[in-house]
Length: 258
Image 1 (cartoon, rainbow, N blue to C red):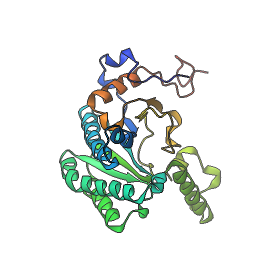
Image 2 (cartoon, one colour):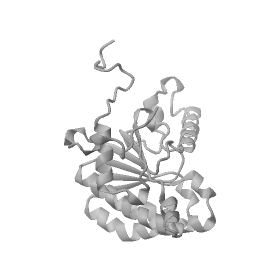
Image 3 (cartoon, rainbow, N blue to C red):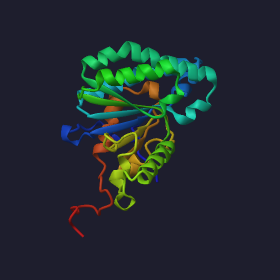
Image 4 (tube, rainbow, N blue to C red):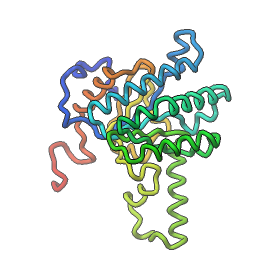
């Protein structure tokens, strides 16, 4: 099956009704390194350019009243990268937190973090928790950063916690349901994404929100993340609104129809 991309979809330029916007958009921000390599620049230059695209995505989400935006910023697999690149990435994250958080807070944007952040140094862990505390009452946009995150690891940890609660008689195995299990995930208070977008032309989830993606619309575009901007975001949303989300039902049927 050929998946539509922004580049080959003529309808991407049609107007969008506000009521059709997704409430939760999750993005796999891919292509920083290739962007830098194509320009003969060090990889950190690509990551810095990618940080500017984060600003564009956040601004667009706020303008269009998208309620939840989740960004795959650092995967559990990224720890396998060279130490210098990891240092560059974490340093850029610290810089972003220091220089952008107050602006985000003034815009009433809440920042959440999901993932195993215990693998980061203690100072960064404290900064992340401080940012969450500072912005916890904001509700214009819930910006979730997936850091040291992996979908399989999240599910395994949830299973361990469920089993522990059952052993301690805090949970009943006979009453365990999908919704109860979801309450053990990092995203317990976040709705599943309506749309998952990946940039750079790669067509896979790469261990991102595996449980939550069950009925998400998936869109893959060729644009490298540093080249992603508000106009690219608008085109992606235009593709999304022309999808028919059936959640397993036949087209045109109501939930009560058989």
